[in-house]
Image: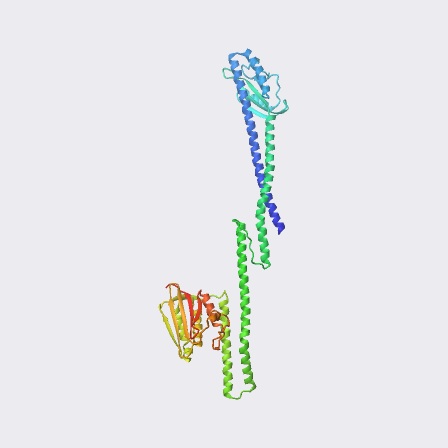
Length: 487
């Protein structure tokens, strides 16, 4: 993997360098050609200016018949040409009706043999009245030269001769070569700078990838709580954020899995622990009856009743454990709807009539608002109320009453269930909602010790809360608060 990342490093560097060098080379080539064209163009205009100036002077001398003074001009023209590294030739047009007189020329075209076709074409164009030029290697001079010719006209406008200017190009070519050297040095410098810049940016690119790779390998080994600590506002930053989110989700999933496993172990541990005693009792009674040791019918019936009571207790225990397991499972979904708390409580009170009648207990339901609405699961809320009512009946004295009060505020609905009987000590107000807890002052009442814990989980799943108060003499009151909804 690291080898691949190194390849990415070098690829980015090489591609960046090649792109920059290519662009620099293309720009250098374009500017070199432009510079050459510009240098040659300027030199051509310079030769053209010289040729036209000489042509005008010759035309003026021919028109004024000033052959004596023109000889002096030719001498000065020769010195000027040597100073400018040029040869300035004045030639007659042999095809003209009145060719330029020898007094005005410094080269006799009749004695000069022209071999280059380009030179012949240049002279012929000037004789035809056109200004032309060409450049290239010249065999006479043995070097690269630029030749420019322009016609000489007499007073009638006839092309009686021409001026040919021959300029050396070595100096100009040297300027072009020097410029090319500078461009080459620029390309090399650009290459070095591009390699440094590419190395820096490649490092910036590869370093987060290596970090993400390391985090991925650790997560693959089960170390989910990892952070990339990469803060970038680009695609790599988005990838790093995704890895951080994945880490959080895996940690949550691991915790969820551990919780499920712990719940499973707790469930089987609780079942095995709580069922051991009643199973032992049932087994003892059953063995006694099966062996025929009990002959008295009334005693035998008492044993059967005890077996039935123990079986009923085991049934309640298993039912409470299953409900508690569901409530503790985060995946368990409540079937929520809008409920009227008063109607649910009335339903629960109807189910408690028989148990209340056995102890001659009456219930009193008091409420302010007939439309006390919450959003919740009907079966779970009814089960919550049944747990509170069953506890109230179980620990209430005979011939007393259970008071149920429902009050509504702007955001909460408070339900209270009060009984008169065995109180709850203040030291037990919090621990009474724990698993398998039985109060020290409960009068040895039967029960699984799970009912109030189930009630607390139902409240938690409905975003509510439950608590208890007692005067530690006779009265005990359980309170439930649930968020209400608008009508």
